[in-house]
Length: 270
Ligand code: NAD
Image (cartoon, rainbow, N blue to C red; front, side):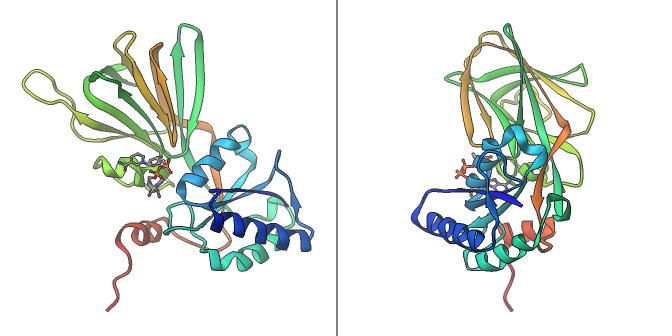
């Protein structure tokens, strides 16, 4: 198996990276930065998001695995002291076909400007916010006008991102076996004049939503941890990515709901 590591860059994470490289070299595992088959992320959830975007053009042929060097993350379920065990398990796998992976849906975002259409993918979520002024945008679902949104912004998350920013917005947690995206409002204005649904909405695969911001609006867009400012957007279409998912290598089971419990509730000790 060809592997690479993306780490957070702090001393602890860099130390673990070196240890893994040494173990891999002893076992003849090939390090391959340009086209790895498995990518180990060492750091936090943000490090895994960085790894995902670093390899965004090869996402259909890479499996990710995460070690956390801070607190337990959502994508990073291996502890630093388990690095030898993880390395042993990884080195037993001889080809990508032997690897046990779970595949999770992604958000596909198509941004239309006068120059054309650009397509992006988000592992957690895409957000759209007004800069300096309230965001004003029409929201259409499946080509039908749904509502005019006024407020701080809109967050569109994948099931695996439903436990991230979406959770802070009061959105539901969605199991990644459900191929869906969730639209959550960020501080919408609701009074006798302006009205939005006020709840988050979950769209299944093959449904889409289009956002039409009022013209030339200055906006801040985010794709996971990446931010861009734009004022040239005509419309944005979001849906479940049809042809690509993210793959996580599973060397031991860690069910989604256990992950939710361990990340947010913790286990009660009697
Ligand atoms: P960061 O370092 O500020 O991370 C924010 C927190 O989000 C961290 O505790 C991280 O562990 C957690 N997180 C990330 N993805 C998660 C997921 N899928 N499920 C549960 N928790 C998750 O920022 P970053 O490292 O640049 O990460 C960007 C992510 O942070 C975004 O994709 C977004 O989900 C999250 N975020 C959350 C809020 C909020 O809750 N108010 C605001 C901005 C960004």
